[in-house]
Image 1 (cartoon, rainbow, N blue to C red):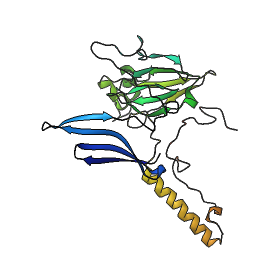
Image 2: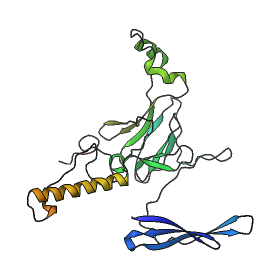
Image 3: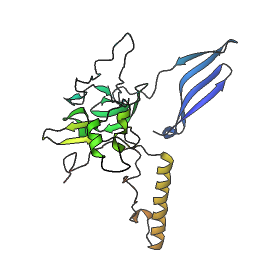
Image 4: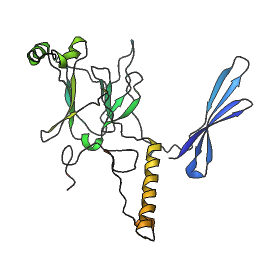
Length: 264
């Protein structure tokens, strides 16, 4: 979609609209906000979503943590007496979520492993795609070092005493999210360096637009120096980091031949 948001004022308040650039700038009214009296009260009148196609929309499951009176929803996974979450099967319709010891929330959505905001439980992003996850088991296990192991590990290395065991000073225990397939292959889902799990795979739009312009400029340049009739005949590729196209969203996390069947 190529859309912009528009706030349009009037004598009664203002309107929140959407400008659809794929439909020649058509303006769609989303909500009307009306100021009432001198108390500055606001009334919100919702309008039917013209773009809502019930069968085509991606439906999101949001966990419910409950409160002091109500328990969490049925999808909440609890730890066993050993401090682990027993492995369970993952299908497209599996509903499950849990908190890691660090407070981060992970859960299932349409066969995908998603990280949720720990406070609001709103989805943050994709951790493991359904292409890699469906048909496997997932669980959470303890992976940290105990106090005795820490003491032995660095006792002979000056200046490194307890370097890998700093977390033991607090209440946070180290954990591993593990996947198990039918052939016995175990995959460890490693967190990011900042401790989060969701993969930052939706790239900045302005950066992608600049990349597209660079490729276009390179095609024009190549066509000029090679006397080509059409710039599209120029063979131009890009080289950068882990990304292989100017597409802004990755929908798969599997690695062919490693965590998924080889493409060959």
